[in-house]
Image (cartoon, rainbow, N blue to C red; front, side, top):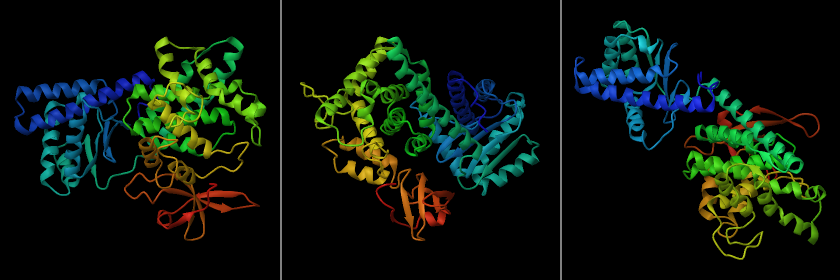
Length: 463
């Protein structure tokens, strides 16, 4: 299981950094052991570096190095691709894949394993590439050599352990709930006190960025499966999540993703100034009401100016909320005299804002559009309302059958997409079968995988 999930964010980042150093040291140890004898000073130096990295990790009860879906997991935590480690991680993946190895388990305190045994283990790992299946040959040699503290596992690429999947989902839920409560707190405190702190909101955004960097599908699932009733605040959190996931897809750094998430959370803060009767009106807005509604981006800027953040942070999060109703062709609102391109964050927020609005029940449109239908409507407006390149990236991110889409299988049954396919076959998402119970109510049960590929058509625009 993930041994780092109880650490603070700072402690966890340090642990991940030491995990990267450990893997790099492991790689250096293998490369050096290939060409030098055990008594060579370079071998001794590499072994010392490996032990130093291990000393910073919780290896008292053992160590797990797992490969899943082309990524390394150390102690259950995914190691990120970074420019400094990209080449090394790529070579290590090749080393594992060439031998068909999926996991190395060390059931001992690595710092206390004798040097001779560690070097023997490394040389067996290297030689295993000459034998098939490598994992069986290697495990037999480990037992013969008395290295009972080590074991390897091969075979097909495994799914993430269920306990890790569940732990990640729980962290995502906690971050979502914290962001939701923090935006409510800020919206209530500004009218009462004239200002509001954002420490809790920033921490929630940072936690969501952590999950997005690990597995964006977990956060996307929370943003697209409606589980809350308070639209104004839920919408803001959903826009933040969708924006951060899109930002990750186009390669934004962690710090930029945090800024983008804060923009998303506070982009509609100005709606606290809009008459609630206007927000809840089921019919068409009259001219006066529409004029008041169109002022909310400027009101959002005014509210953000009251947040207790540094001038530098404030300057970075003002523009996108102001722009989120400006379209790609500069139509929309508020009207601007200077004709300049909408900022990158503004264009991202526009896409996320419209998608979440279309797929949500609103006072003026009780029936929400299905995610797939919403994307088709947005695609028709690419180049006018939306940045066509960003919209294409967004559609690719959501998948052929976005989470929340209602599908009709060739069996006649209805299914709700709860997770998009992560493999090459995008037509096989994870589906919850909908079974009619009393009246119009439905209950859900997971659809067998063989049925998911038999989708005939979407069950309608209102998923």
